Image 1 (cartoon, rainbow, N blue to C red):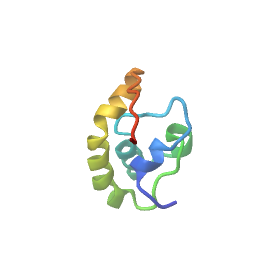
Image 2 (spheres, rainbow, N blue to C red):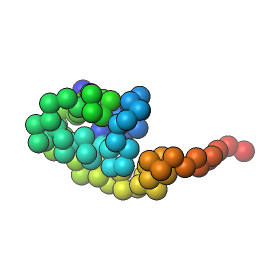
Image 3 (cartoon, rainbow, N blue to C red):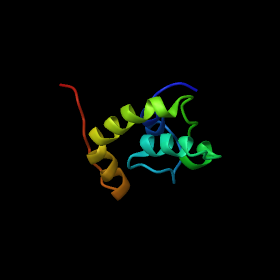
Length: 82
């Protein structure tokens, strides 16, 4: 599968999947020979996790306040538009 691990984990529908630095953790898991990313993270790892790792680490860092809030069960009630 292709795509950024961070974006894939944001879209994963797995209740007990990691949230904080999930894309980085998925890449690291795949690089270290993890056997079952779908069961652990709710999505498959990218084909080239070593190439994806720096981008996922950056995006996970930018999204850290939101992922921490989600992990703590805080509802941010953010809305956009006019």
